[in-house]
Length: 323
Image 1 (tube, rainbow, N blue to C red):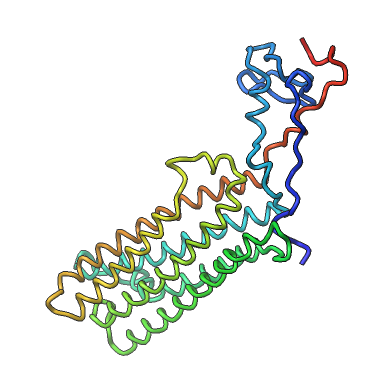
Image 2 (image 1 turned 135 degrees about the vertical axis):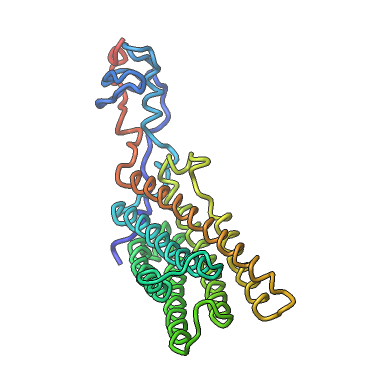
């Protein structure tokens, strides 16, 4: 396969030289005042505001990203990452809304009808479509496993593909079983429906944990090319808390099963609903942050920072290079 995700040869870099031996070779605007520094030696200051020329150059380049293997198709990889996060967000949003509608009706807050009732029945089928659409993303990352630079990303991408496929399969089975229960006269609030819903939600959360682990590896490999993503603090979403939230969905599902099957633990069912809903909300918020983070990564892939040798050149005559 000729088209791979990563180029095995990292970008080159200049040999170390004194700043006085280098000058800016192209139009570079001062970071502070936007003065054009072209032709200025790196050991000099901006004639307009006095900022060191080297500080402006250092701000433009990204040494950490320059040392990484080049992404051969940055548009496809960046778009695939954003698409994956968008489909994952819509998938989770679909299930969260369905659970919310059912729980609100269960506590007699409101009696749904029309489109809301239809969404309660067929929401899982819509989630299946989002999962199937997400399968394009791992395909867009596909590397050639024989290249040394591609090997670290092969396994997580393969696991991500399998996990998404498994979630689509489980979601469609859930939709079929739910439809069969409704056809048999079992309402969505009956004990049997709660047990079915809890079991499938726990299974989806378990597969989701595998997906998040694979996604964490993919983000580590691709996201390092974005300085904004690397340096982000509170606005960068960490995967481990999302895995913990997915585990919370499983725990809440188990509490609901315990409450529905054993009368002495009936209160556990209500607690399970709360734990599951809060955990789903946490996962949903995390996916929203990941969608923003993936947009940062895509932007960096499409417009990577210039490497040092494209901004500066050695001075042939030490008398050149500005005052």
